[in-house]
View 1 (cartoon, helix red, strand yellow):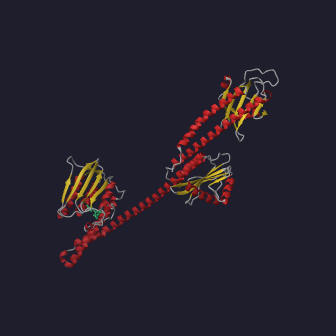
View 2: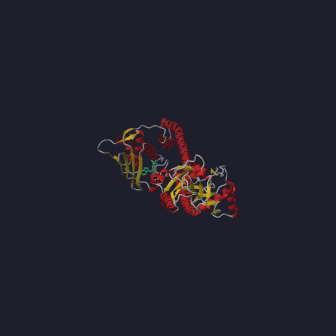
View 3: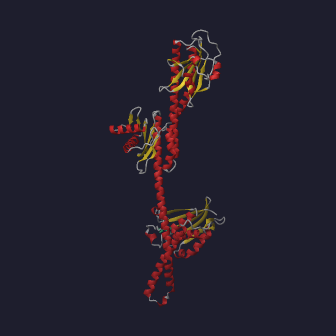
Length: 594
Ligand code: ADP
């Protein structure tokens, strides 16, 4: 489920652009209002920047003054020093020139001689209205000069000026608030982007390492804590007190946080404990609510956000984010972004788990495979010597001296030894071709020659079954495959001998050599007994023999096709089979051309 609402983000960004120009316009109008209505020759509005300096952003009245002042910066400390000796006129602060501290840098001094009367305005007089927010923090400054009547302002004029100061203060406060919201949105979505990018990794610890800071920064958080439910290990991250000390979650809080996460995941929302608003979401038992509030108090935090981590229907863990006093309340955009992060991390966690499990399995399989290969190789080597001895001694016996019953028994022993010998031979070939470390030659192999040398060997078997074997080759020269001659001949021999074995007497076999799509292709087609679709699935596995009784009548080890597959694979080729039970089979091998 995606929660991001691009329209909203765009609107917020547009609002920011709007608020900048709109703020400037609003402040300019206020400055002009002061010059037109309140009866001052000039009025300037400054905004307190993060650097701690006031920047003059709007000047009305006098061109010379505008040129001098606009864009000027004055440190807050200088202004405070000037105003330390001011007379308090309601919201206004007046510093008569005679009180001005030595060395104060004044921005602009009108070139005008004061009137020679009592209460006359002096060019060095200072009259300003501090623009403070609700918490009494400096946001800006409205300064005036050059009263039209040349006099220090009376009550009426001061009141008018105050009204403008209030307006300017409001415009500033709302612009600042708006700006802050926009920044919050940007930070939250930046955090989400980082989490989403990091989530592509497959190691969850790494993901968390990469994301923790982004989440802390993105949500103006003081502490961050993540717990994965079935993880015995310690939770990630840490909660900190407002003083920056580690504040481990108590067992009680862990229990409550887990329960809240479960509920929140079900409802697809986040849990929130807010000190300032005295609210807890979702509703908890009185006891739990008290415990949570106390914990937030211990932390010295103003709020704690519980975000469920999950994927699909399953809640997998939780994430708690704490905010210190002085940090803003959570906006909807932020809680939405936090919930999205819960989704991203949940999915990442699930992927990481699956990946770990898969890796473990692959590792186990690899070990098993290695064990199997070693076993096959050892057994076949161990069997080979005694078998050779048995067969050698059988050959040395002088049959003419033997009674018929003994001769029959020895013939039976000879046949069995032959069968075992074939199995051992096949096993030896298999263990050789499945050994990735064993080098094999990579030379051009003429496929026609390879097939023909097999045909020579197998011609007798084919002839004894009256099978017609034909070989088709392209007319434009030999087809060369890149590989090991002995191994490729083995492929041909196995496929051809199968075709001969599994094709009833009197029928035909066609071997076709061709070039297809840049590959050297060998095809063995027979109109034999065929292979059921079900059996085709396991055909190339070691020791697999089909369940077809007709096939089982033929001697076999179930290793021929496994050997073929191994050889073809280590040559970078492919093999496939098309077959219909009772109609015949086509085995097709595609190899890299030389
Ligand atoms: P086997 O030693 O049993 O021939 P293979 O690995 O060569 O072992 O073949 C596995 C099984 O595939 C055989 O037992 C047989 O049932 C089936 N098979 C292989 N080639 C053919 C074919 N050309 N026609 C029908 N069945 C075949």
